[in-house]
Amino acid sequence: MVNLPNALTLLRIVLVPVFAVAFVLPGTGARLVAFFVFCLAGISDALDGLAARKLQASSDFGRMLDPIADKILVGVALMMLVAEGSVYQFNLTTGLSSLLRLVPALIILTREFLVSGLREFLAHADVSVPVTFFSKIKTTIQMIAIGAMILGPIADKVVHGAMAIAYVLLWIAAALTVYTGAIYLRAGLAHTRPKSGGEPV
Image (cartoon, rainbow, N blue to C red):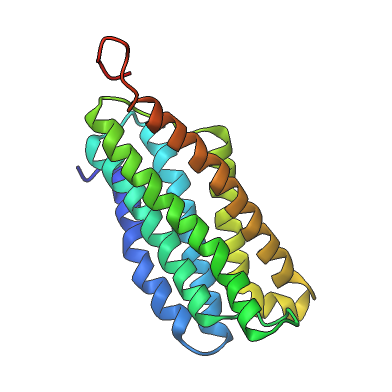
């Protein structure tokens, strides 16, 4: 089980608590460490898939663990960003600002729960749903947006409006999340409809 792709996936999980600790520590240095650790974890996500293909080292353990590691990383990062409430540049009331921070995070996390449930259901039906091109784009924009928001309080001092751009990217990722989630849901529902003979599709 412990081949290179799986080791990279396990590394991503190990990096999550390191990221969380660095994120909550005060100071610019700690925030830069959190940003670096998040980027390293995100890069490992791309590398483990590449290594599995190049080395022909894919395994059932890796296929199970990889989406779990992704969800842990994204979920923890989003929850901490929402809890921190660091998007202070918008001149909005506290309630509206909190809502604007919370909604895309809820959309993304809800989609992850939905896809996990659908994949489990379809696995019992011996059906696999391949990752779509838009899903890959969604993941890329999502990781860039989260990373930009982690660095945002520092970057905004250098480039005014950097946090606003990061937040727009997060909303774009949320929109793509809805679209790709609908694709998975449609695929799942297609296999719940009985054929005329009573057999599942």
